Length: 232
Image (cartoon, rainbow, N blue to C red):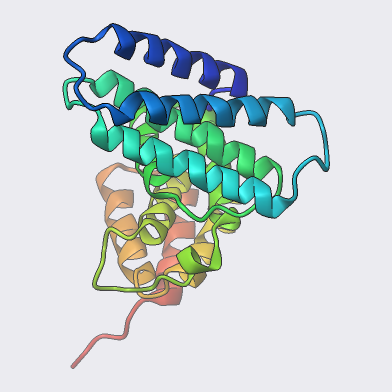
């Protein structure tokens, strides 16, 4: 589901080679950005099995730098290079996983959230959905306070909101009651203004897609717990 550090670096080097052969690639910043990304993955690979080489603050800073470079690369690549953009998105998950695995903080999750949403849309297997839900929860738990406290309801596309809504959807689609029972309360706490709408939509999906009774019952419990009172 997530590339290893080794595979991510290999993909970056292949992308670097492909772009070097592309005479139509006119953005001169791209080779420099890719070289910087390769260097970061060299660092990540070197310390993979060496505890205490870097502080968690340094790990978080390296992660933020790498994900920002990936954001920038995706923006600068030609729209015809959609496969390269997709691979870079997947590599952002590798970098986020590296940060999480070192108990560091994620302070930039835009491309990570977008890529997780795309990945969720490709999965049907409930075991894989359960694994993805677990990974999304790890990402949520590693987010910086600035991300967590971004409750600006005027911006429905803010990463914190999208991440939590999507991990709720993935948890539901996994049909795993333990995962749902763990994720749903966190959604209520993380995005309290959006939780009623999430569970209302969930109830509609229960009927439309004919979910198993035990899933419907659990969704009903949480829907009732956040349902807004009727206005008379």
